[in-house]
Length: 143
Image (tube, rainbow, N blue to C red; front, side, top):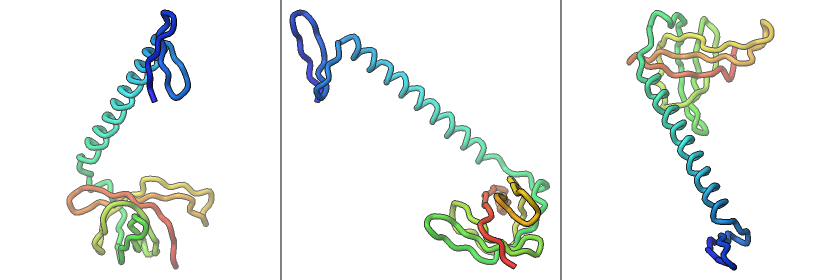
């Protein structure tokens, strides 16, 4: 609740039991308004850069890995692919819509592992027929 009160020539605001002088209230309101403006500008910049990045077509020569998608399902809002890459079977997970099984080209975007027998984190970027890409990370390895 916001109430304005005056007492012996002093003006102050009563906000839920707390009092602020008019000057302090104006300073706080102006600061919050400026912070909100900066936040809005930052969000707009991120969105614009995302749209600019998403609009660029990928260069097919950068995608040298053959990926065969055998199945695609969606659980808990995440798309799960069962794929074969270089003769090994993997399960990949990512966002977006269901991907039609078939052959795709891909490249490794991130690959982090401590040794030769563990994969801590690996992300593939699949090239779609319309030259757009989707990113999926490894969530399972089968024999």
